[in-house]
Length: 446
Ligand code: CMC
Image 1 (spheres, protein in one colour):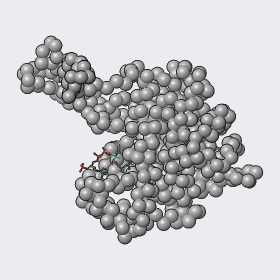
Image 2 (image 1 turned 135 degrees about the horizontal axis):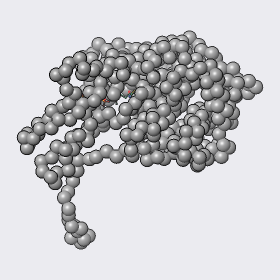
Image 3 (image 1 turned 45 degrees about the vertical axis):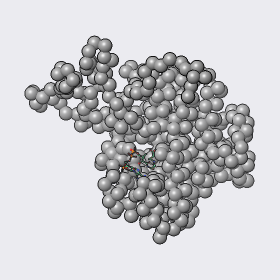
Image 4 (image 1 turned 90 degrees about the vertical axis):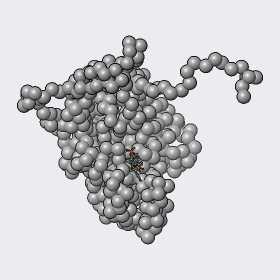
């Protein structure tokens, strides 16, 4: 069973007495044979170390740049079957959660492993709602940024700065401290994001409103102007909540691996989340939603799509929002996002870029280049259109990914901390550089 398969798929070797869950390896350099155990369809890389040519040999390693076939942890949080296009949090299909849950409930599920009872959800919501305010000094800190600073840069810095306000966060093995930092992080991320947005507009910051829902309050902090009480549009509020559910976790992606890797040094969670947010910022990861919109604007009209696709096939450009390391089928999140887009357009008016996006998708899904490589729309393909229709500038798109991913990052970080098998992350390398050389004085160098 691979670590990404659900526990129920496990097959027992009791059904076949002759079968042994081991892998036999013959080293043709020495003729020696080895037998290494297989568990969950996986061998332990350290079991390869016994394979040596002689006693001085360090032992065999596996080489896996970009970790395309290496499991770095055992996890019980998120399951993806990339070939079938399945995504589940703690066993619950993403489609059901998107239809029936809320982001805060889903965040609870991801972090605690079970859906909350009414009392647990009320308590969870109360604590997060009562940790939405940020220290006034963080406000001053944000004020220091240039007016056109990218909000992701501001968020990365602000969340790192939070660690200086909460030194108790260093007690990472104290459960109550972890709980408190979790409330703070989930509560404050939308506030810092909204403040970063208002800073770029030169607008006064709008403070949290505890009577609103998590996404409703976020919309309030972003868009409130002179009204005494901000009332979010229920369709937009729900759309944002569902988008938050879809982005809450996605197992061992680049930013989550950063969270686990940095967290494995036992640093506080704010510093680790700053690292994870930085990883998310890149255009191949959470920055892809921004890159998709820029691409659609660059294409400009439906009749220019074939020309753009030609450049993609020639390897000169990428079709942003397409392809995924794990999904070799339609990203299940993208299907839901596409539906939400139309709900948002009903309120805000149809985003004309949708026609370009649909044409890109139509051509790509029929074209051999994309079919052969199993390139399908991913979650980022349609989200940018929704965010733009809701009034967000492009630079805010990755921030809208970082806010909900915070719950997933914390859950993965906590799982890593409590896993007795985990240690500080420290990959090996294959060194192909120079052997020892003697220092060359300056006047002897050519
Ligand atoms: N447009 C054109 N060709 C592509 C694309 C694309 N978007 N994605 C992959 N390919 C090609 C790639 O050139 C390669 O072709 P060849 O075999 O001829 O060299 C083949 O498909 C396999 O791609 P890869 O780069 O080896 O795949 P990967 O698993 O290393 O990369 C990816 C995954 C998501 C980084 C990549 O598909 C990509 O850059 N997509 C565009 C950026 C994007 O949308 N990112 C958001 C990912 S979903 C949100 C998240 O979880 O972060």
